[in-house]
Image 1 (cartoon, rainbow, N blue to C red):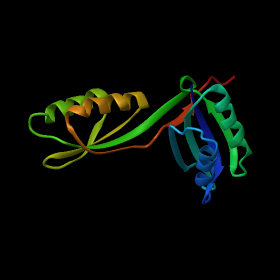
Image 2: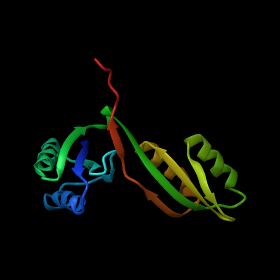
Image 3: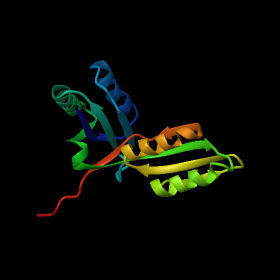
Image 4: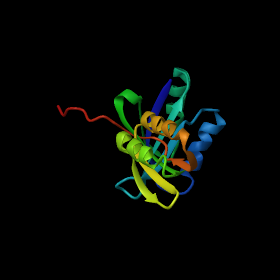
Length: 161
């Protein structure tokens, strides 16, 4: 079972380490973690994706709420949220496969952000599932370097009552 934790934390040194330490000490799994400032420079947003059974996922939420640096914890699953992940991948290309790579980028919504004589860097921002599919399509070319951000997530917009 997978759960997303959207956590507002105080923005100061050591908060990420303390949070990751909580997962490490209790042997909780982190599938993905992203951290960044919010519109308030004193507050950061941390998105953690974790898997486990129902009891484990409830324990994670309880432990996060006990942390002094934590302001607010929201939990939700993938169906209740919009999820995005950023991919940067550098690949080798040649005359024979360049057109196929460019067509594939267009179909998948990726874009070429840098290019040299035999290397190109591609950027893609989409759901983690679509990012994985795109990476799979690149298996036939030589991937030189690749990095992924981890999941960013927010709950879907609901109607205002």
